[in-house]
Length: 254
Ligand SMILES: NC(=O)c1ccc[n+]([C@@H]2O[C@H](COP(=O)([O-])OP(=O)(O)OC[C@H]3O[C@@H](n4cnc5c(N)ncnc54)[C@H](OP(=O)(O)O)[C@@H]3O)[C@@H](O)[C@H]2O)c1
Image 1 (cartoon, rainbow, N blue to C red):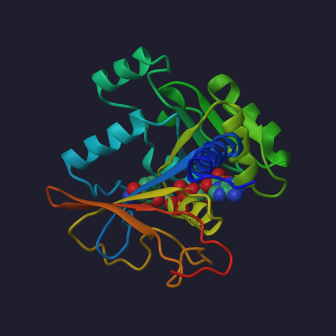
Image 2: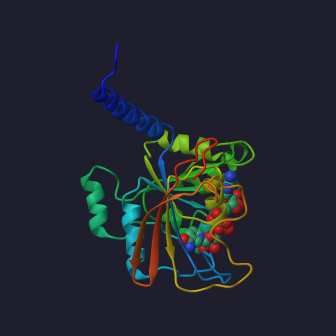
Image 3: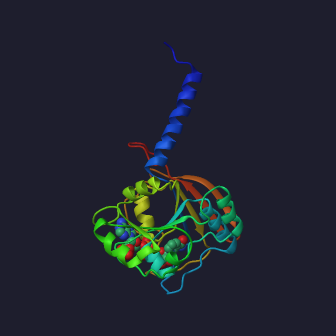
């Protein structure tokens, strides 16, 4: 029996759809979004949050947030910056409700320690999820009370694959990761990012202690395995870069 071209095309289409469905079930599509200085810093060493983007770029980030089911940041970012992580635009929140999803994406964080439940992350917006190692769940939940649901994932530290699997089970199909360095590093070194969105601000920070985009690590995308540059855009004085990050196949270089 010979297989025709049309049959191969249909089979390929079906296989691709299946791969997409399996991927969605196992983990959400992950977009890592970050603003940095020309020397790769994502903040400075002062107590004030360093503003790297301009108004138009903050609006782009608001649009991206509105397109996601959940937004994740590390515990240190919450403690240092006290962000609300909301969709600011009324029109975007209304559009979300019109398509049957809550006005605000779910907020997600990761911690092994206890938190101040009065931080803005917990007092604003919609549902909040906190992932902790199994041994810490009880005390973190006791501290946060009804401000968040604490979920165990991993033993000594949060296992990111288990966390993403749990998020997928809660209906999160599109996850935006918004910092900081420790979180970026783990997502990228573990090959858990599908798309990278970077905003480059036209200045230097120049301080040795300032947090960088990522810490040291073994990244699957190295000089032999390059990401795919998908889009570049000028947003006022900001350069916006969008990379796709398919995992390199074993033994393949590009
Ligand atoms: N420019 C930007 O786009 C941008 C965006 C966001 C943040 N930032 C900056 O990033 C800096 C913070 O970065 P950071 O690296 O210090 O902190 P971070 O990545 O925000 O958070 C690190 C914390 O997350 C928790 N954590 C991370 N991985 C974990 C794991 N596997 N298991 C359990 N807990 C885990 C730990 O919390 P516990 O210590 O509570 O256990 C850890 O201390 C701030 O200066 C902030 O301004 C910049």
